[in-house]
Length: 343
Image (tube, rainbow, N blue to C red; front, top):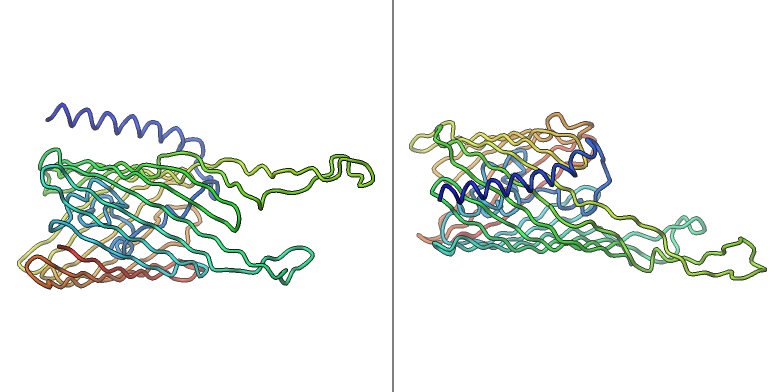
């Protein structure tokens, strides 16, 4: 088993090296990646803890932050739905379902959706709109697997199909997330690590990038209407490496306090830290707070907070409702709401 764990860690290191090759090309390539909706974190609990979740990862939202943590989800399975009114009237939704398979491990499915509302098509000739409307949508569909290799160490994989549509142009790609989860001997402190969105490049294509071109610029000579296409270029996915620490810093009969810290290294920005704290009472009521994007250059993300309630419907069924709030400075604030069912 030790040899197997070593092999897994070597594989993760090799993938990290490949990821690092992309990450090191620039320290701040803001706005140069495709499918940026993949960077929007899932789950009100994670948001209210400042996005410091790679080490926490003990519920169904581990599927997004660290797929190895899905094995720690309580019960035998669960489903969840998360909604947020994102910036600029953009609608964000995330849904997931997971099931423990005993000694075989755990399996999960995810769906992420982002929608941009309709707006008028404005041109130089028609600055107030030409009667047409455009919109945009992004979607990710995933399937994943996680397994405990020992009682202290687990690994997980999340394979995703990604699709973007902006009016009549579309783009597709595939990616994988890989995570590890280790409970250390030091007060059961958890070390979680994940690589997200390691995959193909994406390129928009469709009729909106077609146009007629006159090679010599003289309409009296031919050819005068050569069908041409705008070169859209190819773009990397938003590759992200997370290293997280989490530990229960206080526990008694009723109260449990968990502290978490994540270091994040994206391929389209500078490195930053996320920090969070959760106070739970009787495993039923929760208050959370955090601070996002510490040291991130020109960041508008700051304080976060939220709370949650877990209600045991029966011995084998529980309902959980979570709320999260994030301050985006000069941009409008973002509020998350999610509902989970554990069985």
